[in-house]
Structure formats: structure tokens, C-alpha cells
Image (cartoon, rainbow, N blue to C red):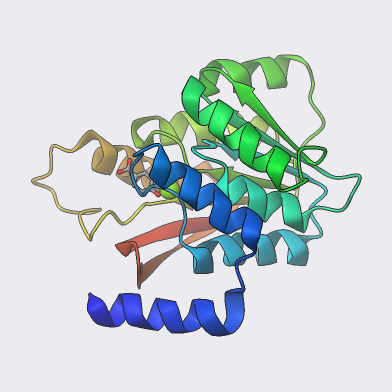
Length: 219
Ligand code: DHB
Ligand code: MG
């Protein structure tokens, strides 16, 4: 574990160069005594790179938490691009908005307060313009629902990233009764059966321990 964290530290020092806005977003989360649930710096940069490679103009984030990943994604979109981020926890919404304001990125990122399923359904009903990239990082038991609704907000080429799907290696432990593990397992099973997307899942180690993510492209 120390080895994983040390190597992550080396990667951060050499490649990531977290700026003041990202560090400040982390400090606000720590000051508010919230859990260490944001993506790692290396993962934040990875999301940023996917958005840049995809040339994403419109990004949907499901689960803002304190806005750390939102900042990474907002940095990746052009000035006329937008990140729409959904969060049900009111104090997280306030924290994230404050951090985005402080980093000068609020013109490129909009945090919407509410239940993600309801908000996603409204976006579908409003015929919202499809997104280029969707980052699923909210409550794990609802991941399959988020995927289903995300597909309605996608177009061919939309990249969908699902966070925290390996869960300390518990993903395929048949004895688990953890609803988060069951949620991500069903998510991956459904993903494989959908036929509308091509997907993989990658296991990761680092400062956040042993976890992983899915990556998909809409056909
Ligand atoms: C959990 C959620 C996350 O989004 C994360 O990155 C790590 C852990 C959780 O609910 O356990
Ligand atoms: Mg996460």
C-alpha cells in the first residue's frame, strides 16, 4: 500500500502539477470533514486527458461531490464548452460552486442540485443536446440506472467513464452483501449486454487503494 501511494506521489510530483484551485478544493473538503471520496490527482488528470483527446465540448458529471473532478473536467473543455454536474447533497453543491468560483471556472461548469435520476430524466425530456463525455461517480447502487439514462443523453462517440467499480477487489465476491458492490457488478453485467456500447474495465492501485473504472464508447 505504501508502495502504491509512494509511486502515486512520484507521478503527481513529475506529471500532474495540481494547481492552486485543485489544492484549494481538496482543502475545503478536508476542512468540512468530508470523506476522501474525490478522484486521485492522477485520475483527475486522466479524466482531463480523456476529455482533451475526445475534444469534448459538453461533459456530464453524475455526482459532483466537492467539485475536484469537476475542476479537472472544466479545465479540459474550451471556453465555449460546458460541464454539467449533478449532486444531491446540498452542502456539497455549495462547496463545489465555491471552489469553481474561486478557480475562475464557473462559466464552464454548472452544478445542479437534486436527485440524479430525476435530473437525468428531465434532461432527456427537455431533449438536451447530447454529451461528448459522461463521468458516472454518484451512488453505486444506482449505476445501472445512470448508465441507462446516460445512453439517452449520448451520441455515437460519447465516452462514458464509471468510477469505483473494483471496490478493493470485491467486485466478483459472491458472498458480498454490500449494495455498492452489487450495484457496480450489475452495472458491468448490464454494460456487457447492452450492445450499444463497447466497454472495458481497468483495475487501479494508488493513493485511493485498490479500485478501478469502466471506460465505454457509444456505438
Ligand atoms: C466511494 C465513492 C466514490 O465515488 C469514490 O471515489 C470512492 C468511494 C464510496 O461510496 O465508497
Ligand atoms: Mg468515485
